[in-house]
Length: 188
Image 1 (tube, rainbow, N blue to C red):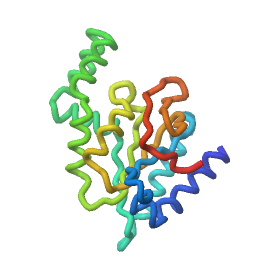
Image 2: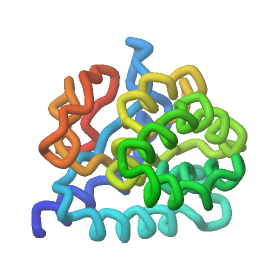
Image 3: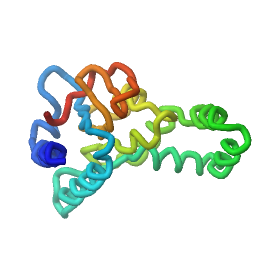
Image 4: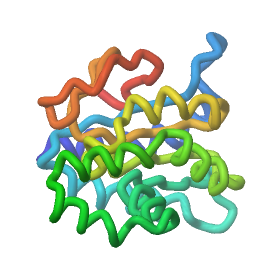
């Protein structure tokens, strides 16, 4: 627990850095970061995400953070498409495989990206959360790969319950999500 708290305590100073908000230098890299953590630390991280948002929510703050919880977005999308109530019936009648197929059919990355673009407004820092809660219906690398089309100048931090070694994402320390080379580890 002490290690996660030490790592979390590095996030606010990092966000306050001018180079964080302006991007990572001259190489034209996108400002995508991953904060990985052990899955059993999920509740600690969730609380800390709220703490970070409060830290920057004062009048006149030059950091305007918006959080996109992929799980909450999936529920919202299901409600908008008027299939939310049917989801439970599909699982009950046809099983988990049918539920998986039904959800992945409509939970396409472009729907999430459209919502992010619509809600972004004047925010200049994006948090992506809910990665573990939405697996396997939405894959984090798919969102990240497509997000750069929507957001290229705004830093994005994905809070990831698993490991990121700078090249691949491994959800829950078990499932290799896919290779992803464009994000930087947020803190050591």
